[in-house]
Image 1 (cartoon, rainbow, N blue to C red):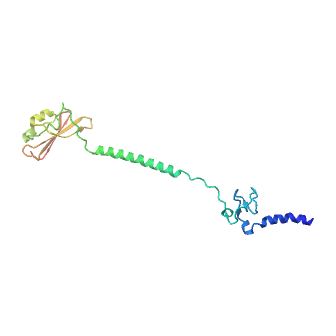
Image 2: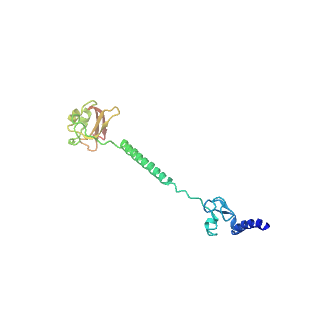
Amino acid sequence: MNEYMNEPQNEAQDASFDIPPAQQEGRVCPYCGAPVRERFCGLCGHDTMQDQPNSFVHEMHLPPQMPPRRRLHTGLIISLTVLCVLSVFLFILTVSQLRLFSPSSPSVPEESQTPSAQQSQNVGGISAEEYAKIKKGMSYAHVSAIIGDDGVLADNGTTVQGEAYYTYGWYGENNQSAEVYITFVNDAVSEITLNGEL
């Protein structure tokens, strides 16, 4: 009887004897990842000696890897979108600032109020006597009749009150470096400026 009792112990010793003691510790099952001390996995029953004893699987079990996330692409798309929106905003802001601070392009004045710049020749210029006759409130036609020719359109636009203004210039009759600028608001003289000596 003693022989029969010793036999199962010997079989258990034989099963664990196949695995050297140095490899028994720290081993994991290549299929389920459970720690293994014997030849067969206690969790799934896999024979751990089927693989080669020095294989990578016996030394360490790596869990399955997650696929890489797509955050890089999403972040890149968001960054490029923000950059494009900011570029468009800065472009619009720059264009609007240039329009505010640049002199307005002269538009063609209405034919009924004043003659166009192409018609003005400033043949004779303005003399000191003609300059003395010009007063505030006179119309463009009256000023042109006093001077004897049409002025050169120097500027036009709208006042703060929303009224149209036109500034015409004449050179001096005897001194070509002298200039007279007359501003008309609603076809009436509002300002007279003399640069130089007539």
